[in-house]
Length: 99
Length: 379
Image (cartoon, rainbow over all chains, first blue to last red; front, side):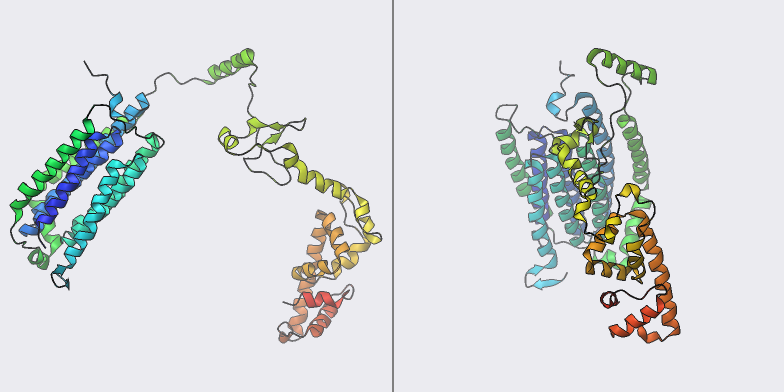
C-alpha cells in the first residue's frame, strides 16, 4: 500500500473544504467546511504515524479533535447569537464593521 | 496485513472504498443547498475517515472519531441547524463576479501542488505499528499523552472549560425589554378589546363530540357554527376545516336511532328505553338474557344468535351491562366450582353437549335458553 495515496486523499478533502469555505455564504456550512479541512489534516497525521511507526501523530490528531470540538462549540454559539440578533446566518449580511 | 488477493491488502480495499465515500461526501457537504444535507454528508465523511483510521492501526482514534465527531460535533451541528436555519436555503448566486471560477481554479492548483509536490515527501516504506501494538497499544498511547504531552493535555482541559463557559455566555439570551407583568398584559388585552373588539378572555378549548376529542377537532359555538379559534393555527392551516354536520352528524344519527321505537321489534324488547331512563335494568327481557351467559365470552356468543335481543342490550347502556357482568361473573364462578368438583377433563373435552349439561347444572337460576350458546362459548 503506497502511503502517498493517503496524502492525496487528504489533499483532495482539504481542497474541497477550502472551496466550500470560499464559495458558500451560510455560516453553518462554512463551519462544516472547516471541519472537513481539520479532518484532512488529521488523516495526514494518522497516516504519517503509521508510516513512521510512532504514535506521536495519533496523539496530535487527538489534540486536533479536542480543539475542533471546542472551536465548534464556541462557533456555533456565536452563530446562534448572531442569528438571534440579525435573523440570518449568511455571512454576507454581517457588514456592520465595514468602514 | 491480511492479503485478500495478491497485490491487494485489506488496507488497500478499505482505502479505496472509504476514499470514494469520503470524497463524494465532501462534495456533498459543499454542494448541497440545505444545511441539513450538508451535515449528513459530513457524517458520511467522518465515518469513512474513521474506517480509514482503523485500517491504519489507529484504534483509539477510530473510536474517538466516531464518538466525538460523528456523535457529538455533528449532533451539535444538527441541533443548531434545527434552531436557526433548517428552512433557510442558501442562495447559491454569486455575490462577487468570477468568484466561483476563481475559487475552483485555485482549488485545482492547490490539489496539484499538494498531491504532486508534497505528496512525494513521504515515499518511505511504511513501518507500521505492529511493534508498538505488540507492547500494548493503549499503554503506549497513554504514556505519550500523560507523560510527554501532559502540558498540552492540561491546556486542553483549560480550553474545554473555557469553551463551555463561552458557549453558555454567548448562547444565553439577554432580555431586550423588561418582562411585562400581569397588569400590563391585561391592559394590553383590554386595549385590544376596546380598539378591535378582540375577545379578552382565554380562547375556547378544542371540541369534544361523541366521536372526536382530539386537539384537531374544533369546538362548536352555541349556534352550531365551528369555532376556528379553538384549534391551533398550525393545525387549522394543514387540515380542511370540518363542517358542523361532520362533527355532530354521527351523534345526531345515533340519537335519532335511539329515540325511534319503531325500529325495535315488538314484544318484550319494547320496554327498552333511551339512556336517560335506564336507571334500573329492564326486567322481563333481561331475566333470560342475563342468566344464560355463564362467562363473558359466552355472553358475546349469545348475542349474535338473537339479534333483536342484542339490540336491546346495546340500547340500555350502563345499568344493564353492569348487572350482566356481575351475573356472568358469579355464573363463571359457579361453573368453575362445578368443574373442580366434577372432573377436571370437562373443560378440555370438545364434546359440546356434555359441557352444556354441566353448565346447565351450574347455572342456578334457569336452564340455558338455547344449546347453541353453549356451543358458541366453548373455550
